[in-house]
Length: 97
Image (cartoon, rainbow, N blue to C red; front, side):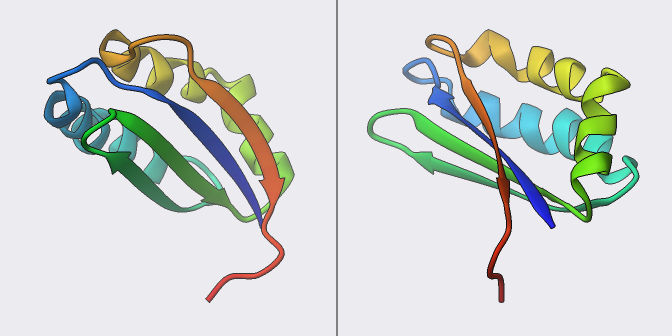
């Protein structure tokens, strides 16, 4: 399995708006992607820092969503709430319970 991890900051006072956008637009779009396994959104409410982790069955399926434009559209939906650029990284999932 492979994970895409996106980290960044949400504008002050916009964490709830960003969370709703994630639930309403980002998650439904992810669920229909081939190989999608799960998604988790973490937030530190006092600072606005967030971490989004999506897990995919294979690296090829993770990459295919990027190639089809799914990821850029999902990121664009939530980007208006960002307080700066987000960082995106890929990881191999080596342990999970």
